[in-house]
Image (cartoon, rainbow, N blue to C red; front, side):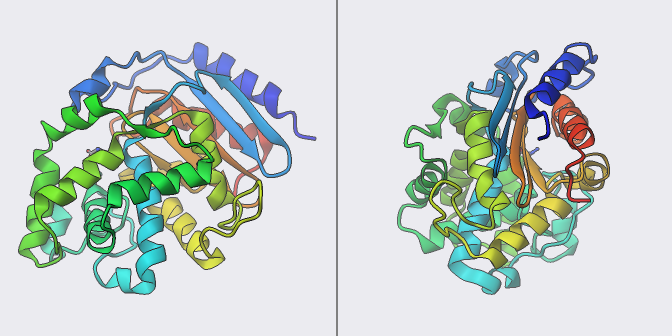
Length: 305
Ligand code: DON
């Protein structure tokens, strides 16, 4: 059997001596308070259980990783109809860019850039009477953990500096692609980004995508195999914004990052993994998180390629 725990220990030792050049996100002031030395990793294998290292039980702001959960709900609700309002192509642009949205007539390139996730939030506002509760309930169900919640300080901190996301929403509204009140949609989007989870909880949630849309512990089918395949494909091609190619090249897994320093990734049929290290590289992805996952797929020989 692959010696998962000793591989994680090797990675932790390497991380301890790797110089950090990245910077903890500061455009959301509350995130800047998190120590850059935090590092945790949790590996959850379909047939070999849990392995972990570091601060893997400490919750952090999942930020854009939440876009996978909201996209999952929107796909389940609308199916292919969703893709009349949003595309599924890599953007090659920064996560919060406005440029492409203007010349592509308010149709976001994909659900994982901010424009796309804001559009998805608009869908959830239209479809649910209490979208915040539905989103939290979904995450709580797939993790079997009712304590998952938001960090109110992070929510308020981002709300106070949300001008770019408000601009994206206004631009899409001008093109007729946002159906609800802008403040309501912005509130839901900022709420979902302020959800806190630890590495263990994220790996458990992402097991859904590694396990064909079924919960591992009781085989309950939560989303169809087709929906799962499609979400994983979008994670592979768009999960890391203008660094999606680099992540595929170095790590070789579908995954999603967040500016809280988290990354969750999967190897379908094999494992879900989550890593947390707050300093971000210039593309807004966890610098050491990417390194740790690259080492994981190299040392285990288990990537999708
Ligand atoms: O909207 C924002 O800017 C943040 N709430 C989320 C951005 C994010 O996590 C980008 N990911 N790496």
